[in-house]
Image (tube, rainbow, N blue to C red):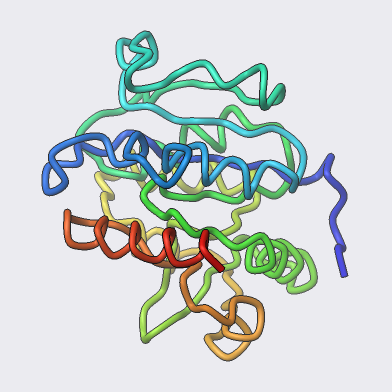
Length: 218
């Protein structure tokens, strides 16, 4: 059951990573008939509200080979960039929370080609019902703070953490009042178990392509 309306929910996609191990921007890799970024957006866009793409720099946003214009297909897309550098995904989360006006925001890395709208809905609902500052999935023994829901008012906490030279996402997350979406519930919402799969290298990408091809031929 959807507990939050579209006007309360936003989406932030982090697309500022260097992609050194992959050798190219992961969000622009082919994923079937679309790029990884387009695949993520097409799944998550119906959640409603604003969708923000966060790049590393303003110069990156001017490069169509890195960030093509998708506004005709997805009218509520906005783009901005990190204001801090060399602090990893925290900069992108901060930029997203600062710009997105919705009260609850799904933050997603852009190297996760199989996002689940059911898992996203579960995180939104959990964050609200638990009155938590963030809802974090736990899967295969790990927390996944880069596919998680944060309240927009976490921004002040994050900025204070960064100002004190904090650089670790989970260290900041653990300072919040969080709710955990457990593995058993994730498996119910995502029976294929791919929602939290992320691509770190070419082997991961080849595995993702194989899964996409198998799925497209079902």
